[in-house]
Length: 140
Image (cartoon, rainbow, N blue to C red; front, side, top):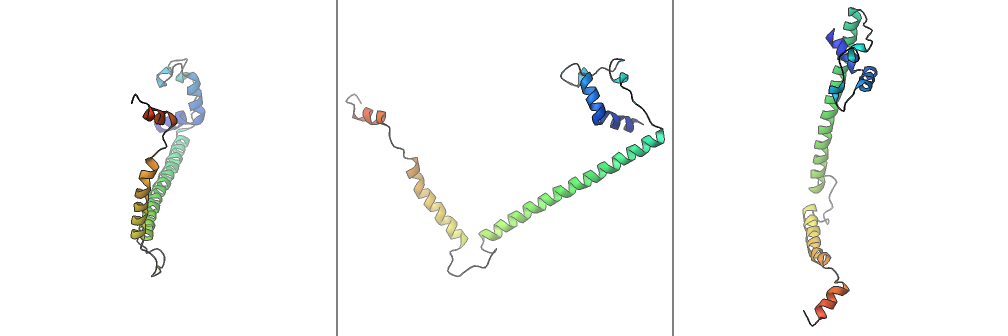
C-alpha cells in the first residue's frame, strides 16, 4: 500500500536512515539507485496488516486534528473573555463602584494629562561641559 510506504518512510527510524544517505544540503542529495533508497531494507508485512496500520495512523491523526481544533477554539474563547473582562474593568462594571470613586474614563484622562505634562521635562537634557564652553566662546 502506498500509504503504508509513505508512513514507513516518514517514520523517525527511516528518516534518520535517509538523512545519513544525503550527499548534499537538500533533499535532492538522496539517491534512488542501489546505493540509495532502494538499498534500505523495508520489511513489508502482509497487506491486511498494512491496511490496519494505515487505518490506525489515520485514526490517531484524526484525533490529533480534533484536539488541535478544540485548542484553537479554546484560545479564541479565552481571548474574547479577556477582552470582555478588560472592557468591564474599564467601564467600572467589574466590581461594585463606590459613589465617591472617580470613573475610570476620567482617571485615564487625568493620567494621560499628567504624562503629557511630564513629557517635556523628560526631553530636556543637561548640557555637557563642551556645549557650555562653546556657548561662552567668543567665536560663536
